[in-house]
Amino acid sequence: MRGSAVSTSSRAQPPDRLRRIEPAAVAGVLSREWTVFTRYWVSTTFSSIVEPTIYLLAFGFGLGVLLPAIGGLDYLDFIGTGIVATAVMFSSAFPGMFGTFVKRRFQRTYDAILAAPVDTGELVTAEALWLSLRAGVYGCAPMIVAIFFGLDPSPGMLLVPFIAALTGFGFASLGILIAGIARSIDNFNYVISAVLTPLFLVAGTFFPVDVLPAPVAAASVLNPLYHCVELVRGAVFGFSGWGQLGHVAGLVVFGAVAWALAIRRLRARLID
Image (cartoon, rainbow, N blue to C red; front, top):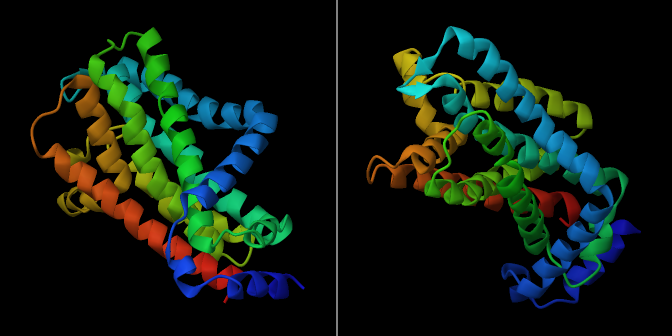
């Protein structure tokens, strides 16, 4: 029954319709996400903000006593800017995985959406955009908390929501991709333990990556969270040169590749 409804909807559209991203279709999905968010925003905001803030307070006031300065910065300033990347990952990759899987497998939300004039590309784009917007807001929470504990405000902080949103788009797309691959929600444990946790531990969040063994430090250029951390610190404390554009390029490439793969995988799950 489900496959029949989706296939009928797809056949009713011209072939080139499936290759475009229609703004009206994306806006429709975004409107739905906003409506749902207004009902559950308290619990969603609590889980997205509190956990990275606890990391900030625990490491900042615990380890910070033993490490008063690192990389020329007070440790609380160092971690207050670095942990933005952790907040971005929590607020984009996790709902990208769990939210997409639940809506696809249990709630059948995507079956209903695809019965409307919306294709898989527009669905994935809207979901990733929505989560990236949330990441842009929630990612700033640890930095704002750090301001109350001594981090000096600067005009460059106004760029942090955009950096967080750009990073969040890639991780939201990655989460959707993983949800399209996973056969069981338990499979996410492998991804969280073997992929996401190592990514934020070696991103320069808690300590500089140049103290790691040379091969690991060199491999950090492949870590999107590392680029996010470097851009956030550059925005807050001052950019050091054109090399920052390399970090922007790294996040753009990561987001584009994850987005394209997520569309392909979810299309295979829902339609093909």
